[in-house]
Image 1 (cartoon, rainbow, N blue to C red):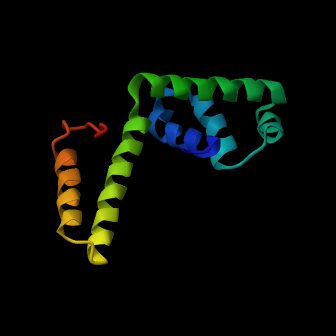
Image 2: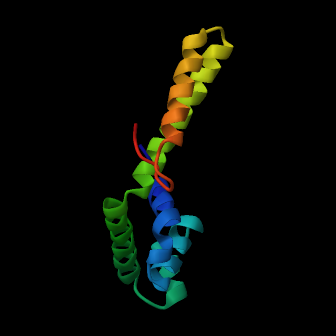
Length: 122
């Protein structure tokens, strides 16, 4: 599972455009440029608490988008399936037998059968 920092960064990649300009700016300053709440507050001319509250609302909005749309969850499932296919190919290369190729083929076939734009689990 992703740690909190990585999770917010990945959620931002998917849903950042849906946030307000101020939320995007503060998230970028805090998570991408590693500015502290105090540094952001000083730059914005507001209190540290206001920055904290704004960031909390922004992260909550990202989590709400994810709960409704599930793009991060589906992306992680897709990556897990691709990693499994790679493991099977590596096992085959190490002399694991044709069963490894068969399983790789099954995984890739399932991915090809997903509806366009989908990243579902299987």
